[in-house]
Image (cartoon, rainbow, N blue to C red; front, side, top):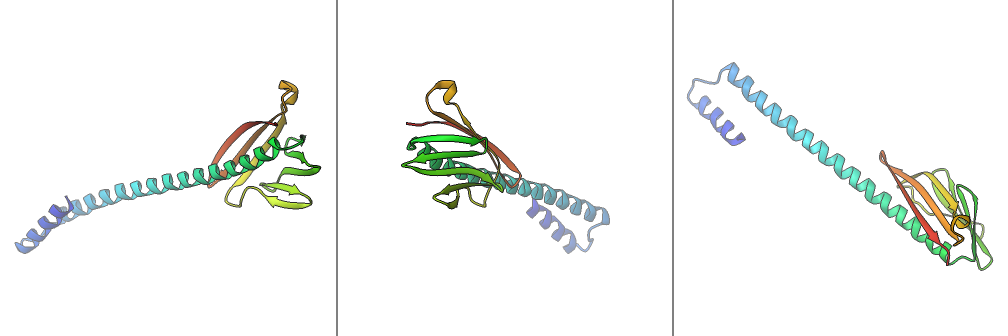
Amino acid sequence: MAKKLIKYIREKIKLSEGITLTESVIYISIISVVTVVLISIIVQIVQIKTRANSMSIISSEVSNFFDRLIYDVRNADSFTVVDSQTLQVESDSIISTFSLQDSKIILNKESTDYIIVTDQVSVDSIEFADWTSVNSDNLLHIHITLSRGGLDETFQTTVHKR
């Protein structure tokens, strides 16, 4: 369409008749509409890509956190929910503490702090719940909300201590 339009304009100019003001306004209007449509499509594509990237990073971070926590709980001698945001896991007389501090999940093990979730995401909330009394099976329920770039995602899982 654009090639035909340019060809038509060139032919008009060659005929020495020129193009009228009305024709110029119409051509500019058509080009403007096409440009606006293309820009809006590009903006939507960028937004979708950004959202998908944020979701991918959030999923990766929560997966790493759950992998670490599940491993520690399943191999622990015992676990204790200190409060809804703090979990202590005891294994071979070593106590590890998972807690939420400044939008980060911190693992304190032998007086050393390790950041479990990176700076790429923000931990909005975490809740540990001991469901042992419900089922008498040493169950731990974890509910966590992470955010990145305006995207908030909530995840939950239940872990059975072996």
